[in-house]
Length: 312
Ligand code: KG4
Ligand code: ZN
Image 1 (cartoon, rainbow, N blue to C red):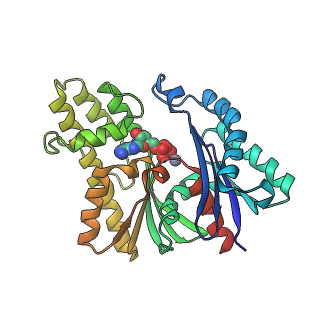
Image 2 (spheres, rainbow, N blue to C red; image 1 turned 180 degrees about the horizontal axis):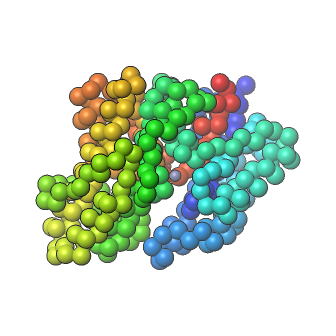
C-alpha cells in the first residue's frame, strides 16, 4: 500500500497544500498565491501574509483532497514547513497541521523549507537519489547544500547578507518593474550585452550580494533607455550566474559529486540554467532543475522532503 502524505507550506506568501505518495507522485497540489496583495507594497507584508494563510488554508486542503479524489482519512501522515520563514505565517501552517495529525492519529513531520527546496528536483526525476549537491536560490535564500542521504543535509555556503532574488526584485523595482521582477529581468537579460557593465565579484569565502546590489542600484540611477536596461539585466544576471555556478561546480568536484540540483524561484532563470549547464558539461556533472511550478514555494516539495526521510 502506498503511503500518502498531506503536505502544507505557509512560510511566506503562498498557501500551498499537496498530497504526495512514496512513489514521488504528486496526487494533487493547490496553491493560493498572495502576490497581488503584496505587490503594491513592493515586498511581502508579514501581517497580511498570515491573515491570508488563515483564510485560505482550509479551502486549499479540501481542494487538494478533492483533486486527488481522497478522503482525509486516507492520509497516512502530515508534513508542514516549520522553519525558516515568517513566524506568523509558519504558526498558521503548523497549528493547522498539528490539528489534523491529532484528529487523525497520524505522524506530524516538521520540514525545513530550504531542505525541501533542495529536494524539489526529485519530484519529477525518480532516478535522482543522494548524494547530490543542491543550490537553493530564491527571494529569501542563497545556499549550497550537500545532500548526503535523505536525513543528512549539510550547508556549505549561504549568503551573509541579501539573497539573489531579493536583489533582482530591488533592481527591477528601481527600473520601474513590478514586484517580483526577477523573471522580467531574466527575460531582458536575453536581449542585453552582458559585457556592458562589469559586475564586482565578492572576494569573501561565503556568498555575499550586498556589494553587487549597491553596484547595480547605482547604475539604475543613470540608465537612459531600454537598451541600457537590457544591458544592466544581462550584466547582473550573467555576473551572478557565473559567481554562484563557479562556487557550485568547484564544490561538486572537490566532494566528488556528479549530480547538481537547483531549487527556489531563481532556479527558473534561463540565464542561470544556461551558464551552469555549460560549466557542468565541461566538468562532466549532471544538472537538474525543477519545472517552474516546483521552483517557487510549493507544498509538493515539503511532501517529498518528508516522505523520503520517513521511508529511509
Ligand atoms: O522561491 P520563491 O518563490 O520564494 C522565496 O522563497 O523567496 O522565489 C521568489 C524569487 C523572487 O525574488 C523572484 O523575482 C525570483 O524568485 N524569480 C526569478 C525567476 N522567477 C522567479 N528570478 C530570475 N529568473 C526567473 N525566471
Ligand atoms: Zn522558498
